[in-house]
Image 1 (cartoon, rainbow, N blue to C red):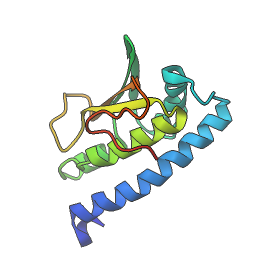
Image 2 (cartoon, one colour):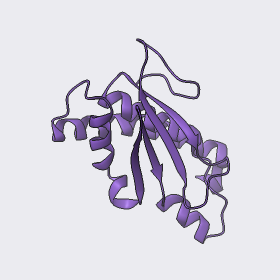
Image 3 (tube, rainbow, N blue to C red):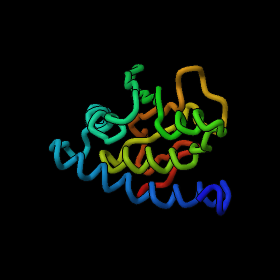
Image 4 (cartoon, rainbow, N blue to C red):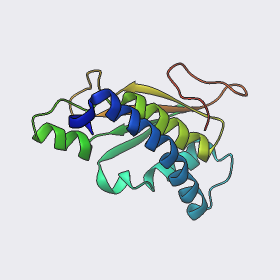
Length: 149
């Protein structure tokens, strides 16, 4: 897709696919694990550890006070691009849709904020990092977050 139609079209198609897939995956995980509808950060942490990505990539999940920090240490897509001499895939917009949709399917009160993700520079040994919190009020959305699914 990227070669034939360009990066913008590839990102747009990725956004469309991920917006749908992430909700499906979250619902299946939530059902399989028997997670409550408003399980908060504990439910989200369990769900993130049960994703397909958890088997494919090295990731870190940690708590910082009332926040859950999710960091992708290795990424099969980015690592493959690196091996081929290609620049990082600019996945920030895809990630915002992905992680907001996933989190809100687990618990609609959850908000997500991108800490860093390509195309912006990322720290050595990390591809992207996301911060999750419980919303302070009904319908609260942080800057850079996607609308609820």
